[in-house]
Length: 277
Image (tube, rainbow, N blue to C red; front, side, top):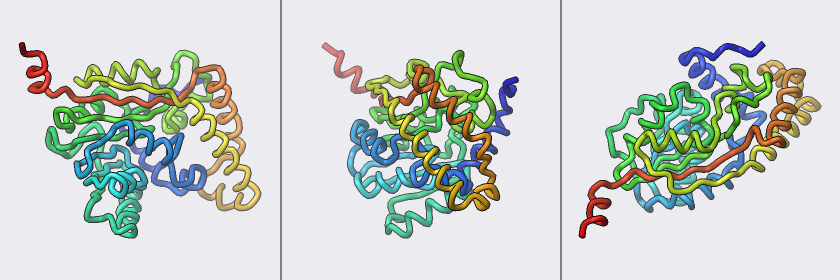
């Protein structure tokens, strides 16, 4: 039997705990999303943020994307995450890289961002919208903090919820970015409802397959070299295998995938000027 839809507070607490844990770092390495920093760089290039502007990284994890944006785009970057552990590690990474004057990290909820309207030139959110319990509120918040003319860049797991197998509909699967993932056009509709104009959409389904390969490879290595440590951290090898197999099958039959979207906040004055006789 599938788990019931989890309580929003429970989901948020579980996500913060899991993504702040050493288990995720053990299995995923430095990048917590399909495509890693290669796809992040592609997202940033497609987003084309203004050099020297201000960008918000929502669900920033341990700060990899925020540091990339600061170093390669010379932007002032704010990162928010629900995990206090991740925020502390991100701050440490920024200091170690000499980027702490440009980068600031804060524990915050994507559904209640602690910034004034129109603060940012760009907003990024990688592989996280799928885990937010209230996606309408979250996308409204992402749109609110964008300045008019600013752009939002998202990458996320895509899914056909009606075709997900039971193994991929539990609370654990929700936290793993699968159980409440949406079709690509549903994400686009969320952004449109939030008042944004979707300008670009891409599919990156192979990135999901590569991440499954990576997790399976790391599980095999850990099972051989550090099984006791992994089990002490909570890795359940017996449970992981069927879940990964179900995910791989869902990718193969098109139930699961990965997508990229760019959306723009309309600049009312510019739009009016461009349509004036």
